[in-house]
Length: 382
Ligand code: PLP
Image (tube, rainbow, N blue to C red):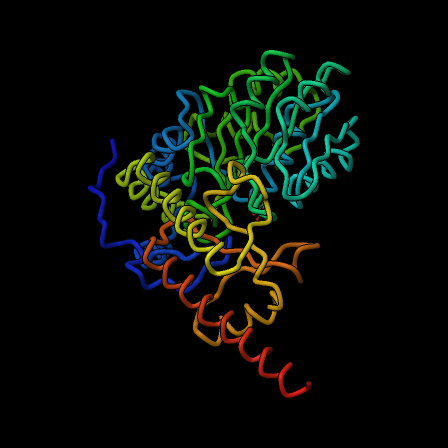
């Protein structure tokens, strides 16, 4: 059980002005925890701290199995899963900047990689995965649950069902911007490795990754002869049994993770998911009235943690966000090829609905001001 009751006053209380889709706003209590004392990562005091974390983490992933940390960003665990567990063909589902990169990583590692491509802003469809699985035997499938680059969520449970019904492939899921923001069920869905970074819906500073790993993935890793050293997940498991990491961990981030896991579990995962969905709903209700349009067309694929939106016709996305900065707000820009075209609002972590509403009101004011100025400009020219 969580050690602390949920402190509802420790959220953002309508005051957050930082809406980057990661790194996100971090509670002062978490920032404070970063300043804990240094100690040996082979000491009993460390194992006490790490033991608490290893006890709480599986609850976040909804697994009765194992969950661990690595002092890398999330990308490090993508690579750890591939180098530790996989020798055979990989099916990489790509529908945005991050999933594309995971596919590229698989290719760069020299793995026989098949790319299943969907347009940016569209989800990965279970039916398409089924077709690919019928064509070839894969050892692993990679999929990004929530594509942060486009604010698009795929139906991961449906994909997982197809993978497990149609093959014995390992399923590696990136839950970087879904974990602690919407439902993620490692055991129920059969996620063999579920990877998450710290600086998203967990609302921690960047610099540490957390992941769950199934017995099936560990068995595959044990079979693999060359797993490298730094990212060997069998080493992580072995040291985990001693409540340690194989190499020097990020002590400040572990202090912060310990505190934040208490906070998240005290809020309750279901409550946290509901809060994230209510922030998305606020954006969805506001957008059409304000002349903004979601990049993912299908509302069922709107991300509960990040909204990617086109501004009203005649408003330049980059100019709009510059003007928002002057109002004291920092939203995210569009990503990659969408950078000049749209904006992204990160509504994840410990940000509250009132803060999101303040941001939306500011967007209204600023966009309307820009449209009015453009109309005056056009009038003086004619
Ligand atoms: N996966 C997703 C969905 C992301 O949003 C990000 C970063 O934004 C990453 C992976 C990569 O995370 P990191 O840069 O922390 O390794």
